[in-house]
Length: 173
Image (cartoon, rainbow, N blue to C red; front, side):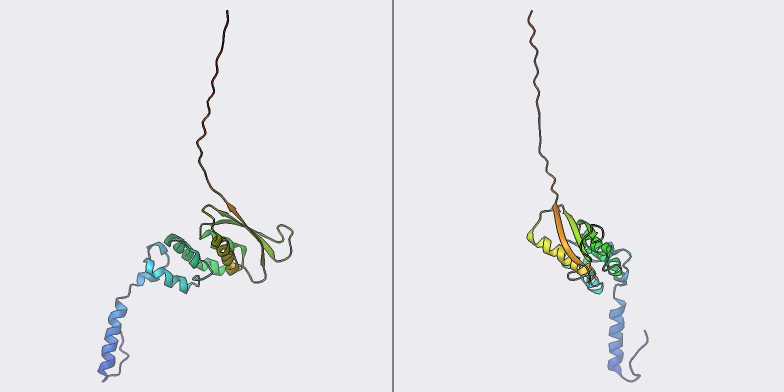
């Protein structure tokens, strides 16, 4: 490393040596975003801040590390298509929510309105609706307005059902 210190200044030369030692110890593998699954978990919040997905864009709604990594993988694409139908659907799918979006011209509604239908497989709590609305508002374009949000709760229940048939035949001679 080239020294930035003046020739006779020993304090700056020592500072340069300390900086060179610390900079050479930095793990540059964290900068390789091609495989986000191998990055250490403590680097994820810093990447979320760098890609501007920390707040209402989805980071605070992620429940586990797997959802955070999925959101980071989609971060660049989300910003590229921000303001589109694709961005809203992708942001919600990163949080394991299946959804369908209809724009006003698809259902003959008022101009610039849209409807969102979300399928929830988990337990529905009161905060989930507000979280979904916040994600939609963060990724929609400014001129469009959410007209209707429909949340469909799907639960799979297993009930054992048994049946029994008894037949008999009586013969008289």
